[in-house]
Image 1 (cartoon, one colour):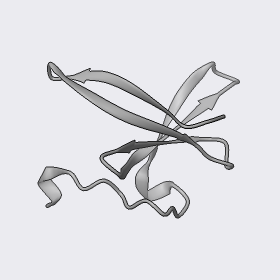
Image 2 (image 1 turned 90 degrees about the vertical axis):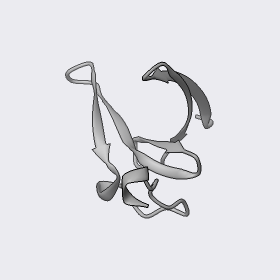
Image 3 (image 1 turned 120 degrees about the vertical axis):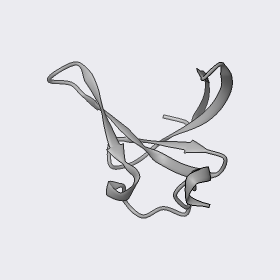
Image 4 (image 1 turned 60 degrees about the vertical axis):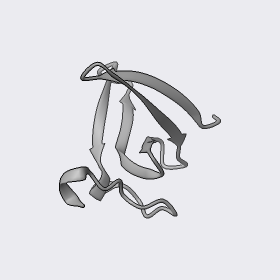
Amino acid sequence: MEPFNIKITVAEERVALTILPTDEGYFKVVYYGGVLGGIKYLKDSNSWEAIPVNELSASDLPPYKHKEQQ
């Protein structure tokens, strides 16, 4: 699968996210060049599971720094 972009609305503001498939079977969610976290599809329960950024495999992209962290 190829990376793709999605646009969502958060607090009445449009936000663009990049979704990067990984070889490990999950997708990294990227915002402004930083990794927000990941998502994984669970076939057994037909649902999605969030993966915190600190549980993802190492990447050439840094974790996203929230305004509160800067």
